[in-house]
Amino acid sequence: MKNYLEDLKKVQELKSKGRCLYNKEQINAAIRTIAEKMNAELANQVPVFLCVMNGAVIFMGQLATYLNFPLQINYIHATRYQGEKEGRELFWQAKPTIALQDRVVVIVEDILDSGLTLAAVKHYCESSGAKKIYTAALVDKIRPREVGGIQSCDFIGLSVENKFLYGYGLDYKDFLRNENGIYAVED
Image (cartoon, rainbow, N blue to C red; front, side):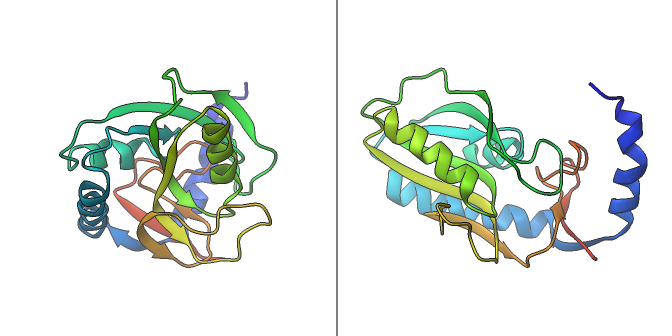
């Protein structure tokens, strides 16, 4: 495992190129809108929410406080980025610890980018016997999806340009998730 200080200079340089696309208030309004739609759609289904770690943890935590129906929360850790700017092969770090058989599942992601990670997680849920699967992402990056990737989500908060993003769960080298907005990095 490499020393985090090696990455810190790169992180600070990248942050200096950031431009705020959405501030905290705009993001919270989008999360409340998603919650209203979920409250209408999922009220009588007792779903399992699967937070895709690590990126979706902030979104999932805030979203949960606006949902007014019985639910369970668990997590899945599948990543193609592993702290980098571009995705690679899917790497599974953890699968859910709750049975998905005959359950309604809501997969909660930080970003719909290529669609490949979300497609793999959805396939995992299908193969685990989920009876219905919904997808949710805080951010929809406007770009062509990869072949075999999820093309759109059932619940989307914000649309963003096709730039590298950080903040509100989105990271660079596992830093910047805690930024209080969503930022695009200028080329």
